[in-house]
Length: 454
Image (cartoon, rainbow, N blue to C red; front, side):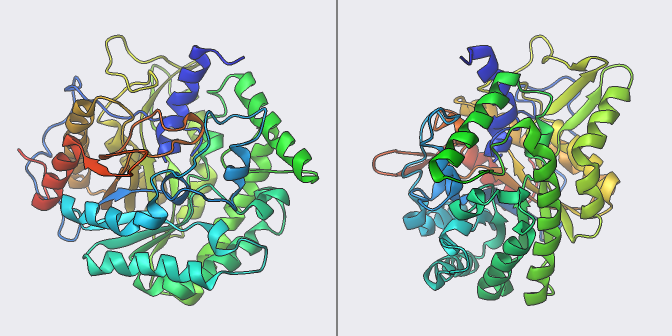
């Protein structure tokens, strides 16, 4: 039985990065909502560079609804299972995608990050749907028609059911299959994209390895084993649901998958900037840096080495992590907390971005950043505080291409269903009506000004 404490730990790690985090697992923290003690303010009022991308983010499975051919649609109905509720209609964005683009445009944004659902494009192994390729091409074109730069994710956690049923990313064939799919998408719509992200948060499960209680990992493993039995296959594996003994295989497959996908995309669109988005916490040492540095080596090293060859690296930050000699510390007393009980601390974004650039030497795209809370006043304060601190590190010479807030909409947040709220807009579950929150106006004003108010 998973108690509330376990769920809070899980939420702290999954909520936003999941969500934003948009995947199952990482934490939705990251940034201060009250004026955090010592929070920098020098960046307020100073314009961001010309051409800076101001966007909001979404993922297909979390918003489109009825993703019948995917691994997670299958797992959401597995018993025993890790999911609290199934995704169902989600935000009905498969039908209402043009409304979503209008929301981004009307906010004052100049870019939109969205994903393409592999399970729709290749519902059966080797059989590609021209109708679905055309569908996603129309979304890219819809962005262009609204002067929104399309930032496109080729894989946001979910994979086709057939792919997971053959072992997912643990199958030696996986990188080649993913590259074939990416090549098809790039040929159909790549020339009008602004940036391509191959894989969303491939280091997610690795980043929460030491944070989740054993019973959570056991339940994830039981979910996968039950799915394998139902399908009569030896191994069923998903990118954001796994057991501890799956992590090494996932890491190998995803690293090779990114490399192969980038080559396939570049073969079709040589000038299209390609990168990968990573969970990057603002890891801070409380005392000796030994433990923090060990964690950084485990979480980021392999991916940062690969990213050195990319056009940019996507940073997805929701929190800072305070590391003591014995492990991760609890939030400081009196800290502002998000929905799961994790700290909300605005300078986290700047710290994560600075670290990622130091380690890779490539430009940074903030592909996700947000806070899970029912109190939109927290979000409305935390956005400008985070961006002010970000502007400071840009002044120090860190090249940042753009900022995508997670999320455009309150949406399906993986194992937690519809409880966590990360959106700039609410969504009525019956009518699907979108309603802007105060935070949407705050981010939109910053985007129009290309500066945080001084």
